[in-house]
Length: 92
Image (tube, rainbow, N blue to C red; front, side):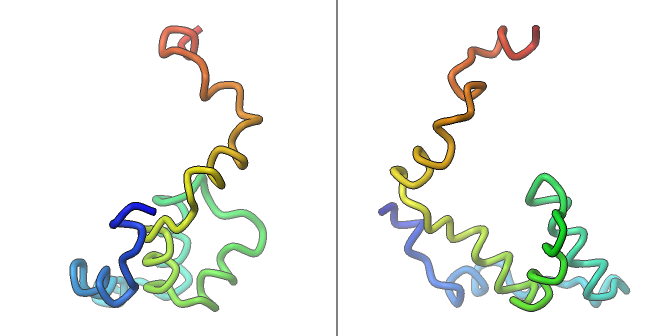
């Protein structure tokens, strides 16, 4: 497992600090929606509730920690044929 994958939530928070969403006047729901829009392909049903239940900082830390092994990623993405295409083919 890569060294960056082994960082703890505490280590990541020390590097980036807490998310400043309340300082910008956002509600927790607005901040959760923003995180899902920026760091995923957008919220699916139930995602906003899950992020809020986990805590915004904890959810964001989990995204940065990238705890899946290369084998897990390969298994989860092997059905995506587009990953094998060259750039020119993607533009067609």
